[in-house]
Length: 394
Image (tube, rainbow, N blue to C red; front, side, top):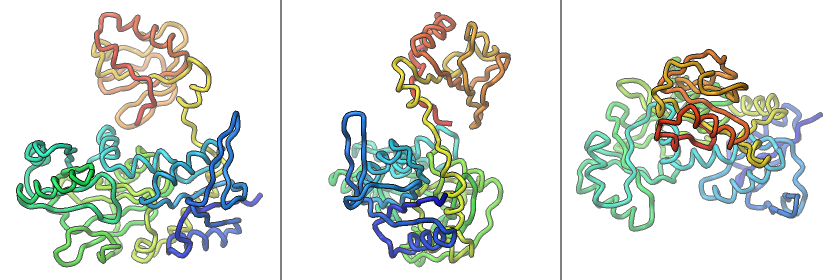
């Protein structure tokens, strides 16, 4: 059966879209480019529907190429398709998380992925403290929403920084002040991730006095080989943000790679020309190999049954359990399907596995019974409120 593939893009003539269509046709796929702004979404009792230009959507897989300017509507379309169990190369949640620079920084930091120091500023009185917190002047000032280098500025004095931030705040922008990595001035590495693997890389360099290295700002590009450390950081960054196809921008710090940004709709022209790698073909091959399988949000699935869900228990909040086996927490059947440790998941851990300080137990089942069971073990601890009823990032 031929996979019917829809590429969500407003620019059918753009290089990236054309290349994806070319490679899909080479593989005899039934492919179409659909404008995300021409979808109609319907919700009725016990039923949802979606049409494109008045025709019922009838495709098996989707590659979203959603621009920043239509993020809100594009993500709404993608969510609708996800509810219909249509396979998507990148999920709506992954796109949203990567588009918000503050949110993505929070997720990367929680998962111990190296990034430049970053401070979120909402008031003029916080500017000097934020500047000191990220290592002092000069600093990079950026808005939380932006692409292709837009809304990113380098400032060398506190006076310049205050004036810029004030102007951005007045216009309603959310502002970040970020550490300036001097040794990586005017250059970065773009690693293109497909299905958890680095398929191509390029080094981008700014021209003249420009410090932003973006290809669309007339920066130069060249081929580059990255070592295992850089590759692992790039792959982990894409994974924790929930992206299967991503462009990860890395700074070359004195102490190793730093993740600057993760792009959910990376351009293919520069990296294909500089690396000589058929990136579009790699993306299409990934779609063909994976479109029969869908990732499941376990917590969302369980919540369709009243009272069911997922709890995460962070051992750092309960030090008296460190060194104890998992079986000490639960009586009878142990509802732990994973243990998060050092950035990895251990599925179905053995009952006698000893707990460590930074471990998190991910449990599932009846939420009231889970809480009651855990509270019996932690009866003397005031930190019980730290048990979270949500999905755990790893």
